[in-house]
Amino acid sequence: YLCDWLPYKGRYLSVLLDMEAPPECRIRIGCRKDGVFRCTECAHRPIFCSDCCLDAHKPSPFHRIQRWTGTFFEDFSLCLIGFVMYLGHGGKPCP
Image (cartoon, rainbow, N blue to C red):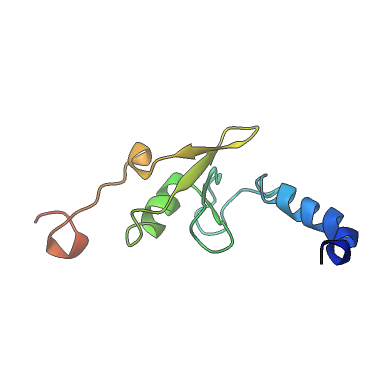
């Protein structure tokens, strides 16, 4: 089976390398902010600004995110961008 795959190795490598860099335009359509975060757990690894990342991960607090440093994506924490998980009141802060 490996011999059947060898002609396609260049395509696979190209896709893998493309996944390790942010898209050319990182400006978010909705908020118009620079997207520097991505989630390794969300489908298609979307790019987020910090506010959109927090909003998107309220129901998914254990997802792993990464931050673009300018040269590579490094592991990062939702807590470092201000994520707070509220355990009571339906996930909202105390009244």
